[in-house]
Image 1: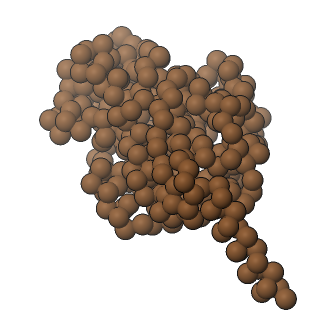
Image 2: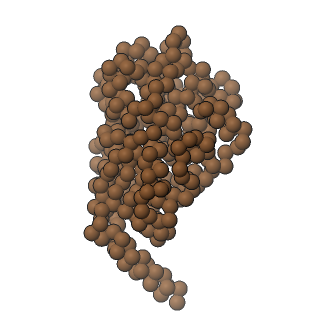
Image 3: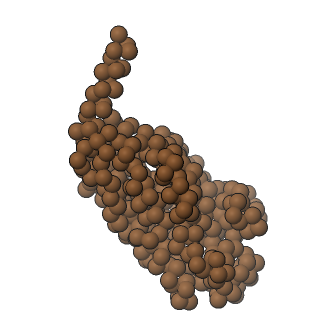
Length: 332
C-alpha cells in the first residue's frame, strides 16, 4: 500500500510541476550588476537548469542591483509571486543585516524558500600596483587611510573590509555606493580606488586582465585556509594578535562565506515546488555540460544544498550575544 501511495505522490508531483513550469519562463533576479561573478554564475546556471525540471522551462536573468543586494532581497520577499517562477540571488550578507538590525531590511530570512548555493566564497583584498600596496605589510604601515570600494552594507566588499580594518588595525577608508565589481575595477584602474576586498571568484571574473598583467595584487586572504591558487598569500586569521580579533574574523567573515551566494524563493512558495527546485539545482550543478561551461568561465563549484543553506542561516540567527554586540559596534 505504501509503495502505491508513494508512486501516486510522485506522479502527482510530476504532473503538478509540469503545470507550473511547462511553457513558462523562470526569472533569476540577481542583486548585482551584469558582468560580475554573481551574474556569471546565474547566467551559466540559466543555460542548463531548465533541462532538469519537468516541463523544461526557459530561464532568464534579470539584474536588480542596489544597496549591496538588499533591493533584490526585499523584492523577492515582498513583491515576487510565490509560484516558483521567480528565484532570488543576492549577497548573503543581507542576512547579517537582519541579525544586526540594519535599516532597510524588509524580510524575515527564515521565511524564504532556500534552494541552494553554488559556491562558498573565498574573500581576499587586492590592490592596484600603482597604489603602492603590494603586500600586507605596506597596507599595515600606510600613513594615510587606503581607499577601498564597496557596494553597500551586507556585501563582501563592505563587510570584509570593515572586519579586517577592526581586527587587524588596517588603515582603511571605505567608499560605498558602487553598483558591482566591474564598476569598482574601473575605479581601481582609474586611480579613484586603491583596491577592493571581494571574493577571489569575483576578482577572477571581473579583473582577469589586471591580475594576469600584475597590475592587481592580492595581499591577504580572509579564508580559513589558503586558496590553492594563492598558496603564498597570508591569511588574515594568522595575522590576528588576540582571540577577540580571531573571533571577529570568524563570525564576521568566515561564517558568512558559505552563504554569500544564496538562491532563494519568495515566502509561501509551495513546499513541493521548493523541493523540486532544490533537487533540480543540485542536479544542474552535477551536469557535465554545466561543469564544463563553468570551468571555461573560471567559476568554482563547491555547493550547499537548500537544506544546508537554510541550516547555516538559522545558525547565524542564533549568534552569541557577546559576538553580536561586537559586530553591531563594528558595523554601526
